[in-house]
Length: 134
Image (cartoon, rainbow, N blue to C red):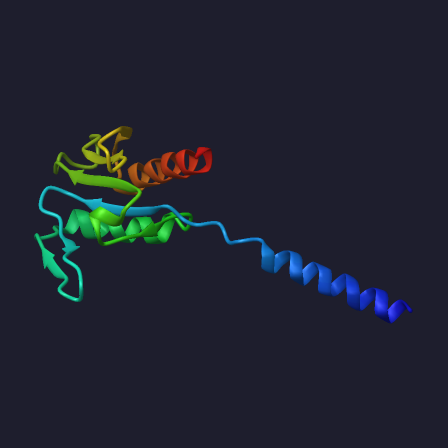
């Protein structure tokens, strides 16, 4: 009888886990002044633009520092658009920026900081907070 009860409890726990869908991650498109994106459809995708080192670093920072989002290379499929820039003003000035908006253009966060890493971390926190509120 105990074996049957344990087996039933284990089965119920597994069934409960299987019935709970996984939490989806927000899709983020990282851009800059001359960023790239994939466009097209029906197997005719095209890559356009020219991503500079700041955009590439922004993408890398999101992957490394923000596991709660998924980087998406299609702007039209993203839940959030992040524009990263570096005005070259030097480490002593707040010249690194991460600006977060929704695809409809609504501004969510604009952050200037001394490091792109910190600006991206703050952008990530804003995205995760907004995503959790939906």
